[in-house]
Image (cartoon, rainbow, N blue to C red):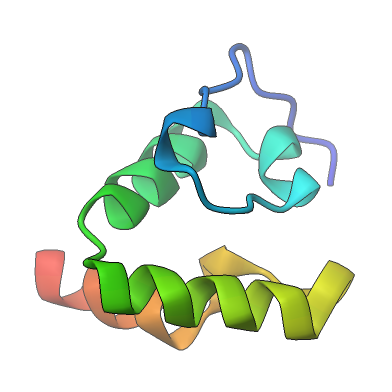
Length: 75
């Protein structure tokens, strides 16, 4: 990926693991991901954390079903 973000959004306030891949996304994608993660309830955050742990480096939130569904509903 050759896209370089001009700024990196601080995801630490979410208290959930965040893949390093997000840091190379453009700011617009990072903002969308942050918006998605902020709306997750506690049950969804637990499911997200389990998926992140099990999938490791292959975990890509931008391509996840939950993110895609959220984005489609938002449009």
